[in-house]
Structure formats: structure tokens, C-alpha cells
Amino acid sequence: MNDTKRIGRPRGFDENDALMAAMNVFWAKGYDGASMKDLTRAMGISGPSLYAAFGDKRALYLKTIDRYADVDACAPIVAFEAEPDIEKAVRGFLTSVISSATDPEDGTRGCFLASCVSTSVGQVEGVDERMEKAIDGTDLRLAQRFDLEKQRGVLPADFPSRLRGRLMYDMRQGFVFRGRAGWSGESLMEDIEDRVQMILAI
Amino acid sequence: MNDTKRIGRPRGFDENDALMAAMNVFWAKGYDGASMKDLTRAMGISGPSLYAAFGDKRALYLKTIDRYADVDACAPIVAFEAEPDIEKAVRGFLTSVISSATDPEDGTRGCFLASCVSTSVGQVEGVDERMEKAIDGTDLRLAQRFDLEKQRGVLPADFPSRLRGRLMYDMRQGFVFRGRAGWSGESLMEDIEDRVQMILAI
DNA sequence: TGGAATTTATAACGAACGATATAGATATAT
DNA sequence: ATATATCTATATCGTTCGTTATAAATTCCA
Image (cartoon, rainbow over all chains, first blue to last red; front, side):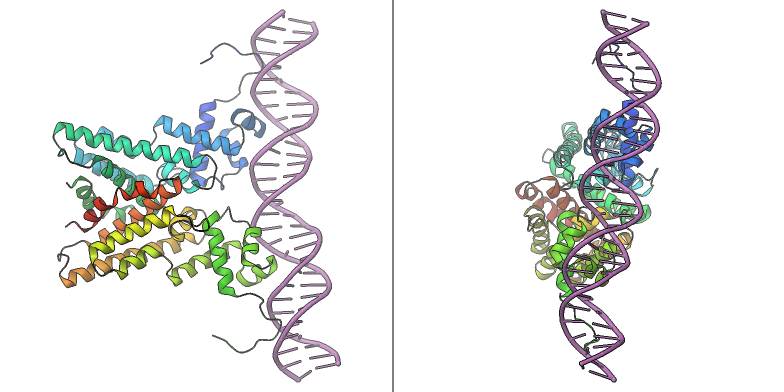
């Protein structure tokens, strides 16, 4: 927005990098579990710098949520939209959900929204609206993919795109949750063929 | 176990009542959100009494989880098992899930396990095993209800009871989650007919 | 009635939390 | 060069947290 050189000492850190680092901490430890010490260390900045740049802890948390929505970091949805064959796309979505929910990477499991932010809904002010909007957005994206197949004639005209999109979202929520509780990827995979047929059933 | 009068000053509170009161606090505020002050006030006892009777905060939390499993306080599952007609039973399960997830009662929404304990999985030591066992148990109860219908001949012999039980569980998880994020009961009800057919589809 | 045992209430503990006051460092503008 | 503005680092603030000494109160046993 404003690229002109500003007066005063310049930032010693990249705001975006710091935000992503903070997100990973929240992701791995949860909102309450992530202390300011954890955050400042991971972000590579000191307390006062954090407060000056992002406000307080809660504001930082909300900013990581907005950032996540922007960068579109949710692998399963991306996989779903990229695969042209709809059945493979649905299977790919579920497979991606399961693998990300059971293969921890840096302590971060599943989707940031599904496995971290969702646990602070109703607890941290400002999260509910963002979560509701995120769910709405995801539901819509999933439904639009089905609508596309209806236009192509692959899916029948009366296919309930919106309902099946919501169903996929709820399935993700369930898989992520089971993954956190200790379920193995293999045991979760037992369900996917039945669920693929289910999602696409007329 | 031991009803003989014990020496010393007797308890001034009922252990079971105190445990249920503690559960309601955790249910409404979450594990981290519930302070010892909240707990002692709701339980009607003082700090030292709490520690003497239940151990520390975490031990108290785990005991409320065990207690919940014992009293079988999950309304949707009870509704599911009580209704003889299987289609009505499935519909009743989902309806019960939705109403309990969107009609807050004393700040407690949904199922204690689904809406509170599930958010502390991976965060509080001892919760994971209990949650995994609880999910297993619920999956099994749901599946057994379907098996019963297979014996009666209402459902075909190749009906995948276990998979559909899991599916119902994941749907509950999704509904409870959406309810916490602000979804209304009416909007959630839009899905149920599609889902009832889905759960019972061969 | 006097001790032993147990629960109670008051008060306060150390630790960790989130958040800041202060001062020093580094840039631009005049 | 001086002034001004912005960022950084150290150190510390006041709370709140979960937890626990301490001592009074209440019961049973001898």
C-alpha cells in the first residue's frame, strides 16, 4: 500500500514470516497452550515488538486466522479442486484429510482451522465469526465444485451440492478429531470408499 | 464399598454432586477456561477439600470424564437406542444432536465429550486414551443397533453397521462444532433428511 | 472426658502468565 | 548536526493461576 520510506528505525523482522511462525505455534500448542514466551521465541522477536506490531495475544491469534484464510493453506480443499475426475477428487480430499490428520508435521496436525481454531470457538472473542465465515466459505467452495460437475453433466441436475459439501466438511471434522485422539491413518482409511460413494450418491 | 462409620469429621458435601457440578463448569468454560475459583464455587467446597477429595485439577477433570461415561448422559445415543423404528431412530439421533448443540442449557452445549473434552484432546494428559475409548464405545453402540436390525431383516445382511455408526458419530461432531460456531438449529436441520437416507443407504 | 482422625476455612505461597515502562539503537527530515 | 520518529532489548510490572501450610472444627474410639 505505502512503499515510501518511513521515518525512524526500520523493522528488524518480516511481518508475514513472524505471523506464519506464530500460526505454527498456535497450531501445535493451541491458543491457551501457546505462551507469549513460545511465540516470541518462534517469531524471533521480543515482547514489545510483538505488541507494537500485532496488538495483544488475542489480536495476534485472530490475525493468524485471517492470514491462513488468505494463503489458502488447506491442502485437502486444494487437492479436491485440482483433480478433474470428481470421484478421484472426493477420494483425494478424504485421503488428504486423513494423512494430514495422522502424520504430524512439526507438531501441527490436520487443518489449522479444523484442529486448532475450532477448539477455541466459543472461548476466544472474535473466533466465532471468523470460524463461521470460514466454514461458510469452505462449504461454498466444495459445493461449487459439485455444481461444476452438474454443468458438465457428470452429476445429475438434482444433485444436492450444498448438502454434500457440508457433509464433506463434517467428515473432515470427524477425521481430524479422531486423529487427535490417537486413531491411526490405516483405521481411518477403512471408511473412505464407503464415504466416497456416499458423498456422490444421488 | 465401605459403609462403616469412619473416624474423624465427616464430609460436608456429596462427592457425586460435587463431581457433576465440576463437570458443568468444565462443560461451559472448557478445561483451561475453568479456574479453580470457578470450580470450588460451583462445587460448594473450598480448595483444600477439593484437593483432598479429587487430587489436582487435571485429576478432577479426568474423573468428570469417567463419571460422564458411567451415567450415560449423552441424550442422542439414548434416543437412538430407545426408538424401535430404525429410520425414526436415526432421525431422532440427529435431531437430538442438533437441538442439544444449539439450545444452550446453563452454558452447556452439545455433548460433554463432543463439545468440551474433544477440545482438550492432545492438550491434557490422560484425555486421549479416555476419548479414544469413548469414541470406540459409542461407535460400537451405534453399530450394534444396526446389527440388531440386520437380525430382524429390516436391514440387508451386507449393511456396513460399523462404518455407518462411525459416520453418525462424525456427523455429530460436525453438528456440535457448527453449533458452537453460531449455526442455528434451523439451518442445521436442512441437512438431516439427506443424511438419514445416507446413513441407511445400502 | 481426652486423644486420634478427618474435614474444614483462612491465608498465603511460588510460578507463570500477559502486558509495559524505560532507555538505547537506528533510520529519515530539516 | 540536530531533531524527530520508529523499532528493539532489558527488566519488571501487577494478576491470576494452581496449589498448599496452618490451625480451627467436628466426629469416633477408648
